[in-house]
Length: 131
Image (tube, rainbow, N blue to C red):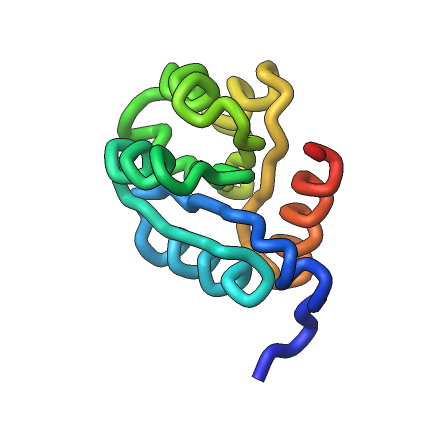
């Protein structure tokens, strides 16, 4: 049973990649979005890049824990690796170097705690505005 699913979004077949080393956050975002979007989760950039060769994403959700481990400089690389994708940062509650770097680049941000309505609404807004 799908509750609160916008059927118009579900048939558009937009693709989202969720990249995060935090398995719980990654799976939570994937679960919240999979009814309306084709959503794939990755714990490593190389796997996401390989998948994008055949199936490029419309949106890349990047977790703060991944960027903290790998370095904020990866944001620029991700813009190069996924040129057609919008970027969305998945952040914790407070400001961090990752949040500040993303803000300086003008990237959209989604803060924890995650709520179904907030995640779906933010993603829909980004994809609608990115067209």
